[in-house]
Length: 169
Image (cartoon, rainbow, N blue to C red; front, side):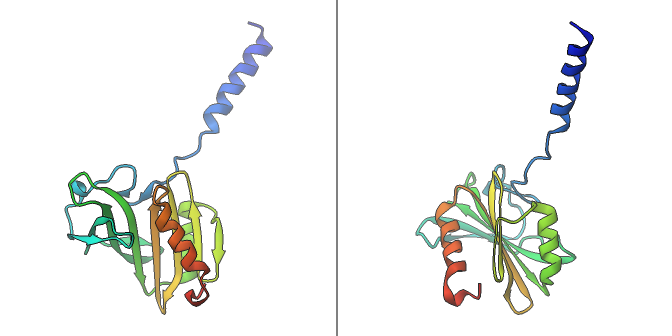
C-alpha cells in the first residue's frame, strides 16, 4: 500500500474515532428509561394508580431527592403496570425555590439545545426521551417531565397543555 493511501486511511480511522459523541442521556440520575424497572426501586413508597389514559400504573414517590442547578428536586416516578418488570414511563422533578435562569442553564448543559420554547416551558428531545421543563410551574417552583419517546400520547397531551390559552405558556 502506498504511503499516501496508508496515511489517508490512518487519518480516516482517527477521524472516525474522534467523531464519536458522548451517548445521549436516556434519563436522569438512576432514572433510566432503557434500564429501570419497578423491581429496581428500593426507596420511598410505590403504590398503584390509574393513568390519565386509563392504564394501570405504579406511582413511586418520596424518593431520594435529586440535586440539579444548585437546588434539590423531589422525584416522582411512574411505571407502566404493577408487576416487578413494569418499565419506567415518566419521571417528574419538582423544584422548590427554583431559579429559572439557573435551571435553564443546567438543562442546556445536561441535555443540549432545546427544541422549542413557549413562554414558561422549554422542551428538549433526543433519541431516547422528551423533556418538558415548566419554569416556573407555580411561584417559586419548577416542574420537569421526562418521558421516553414511546409515550406519544402523554407527550402530545403536554404539548397541547403548553399551547392552551390558560396554561401561562
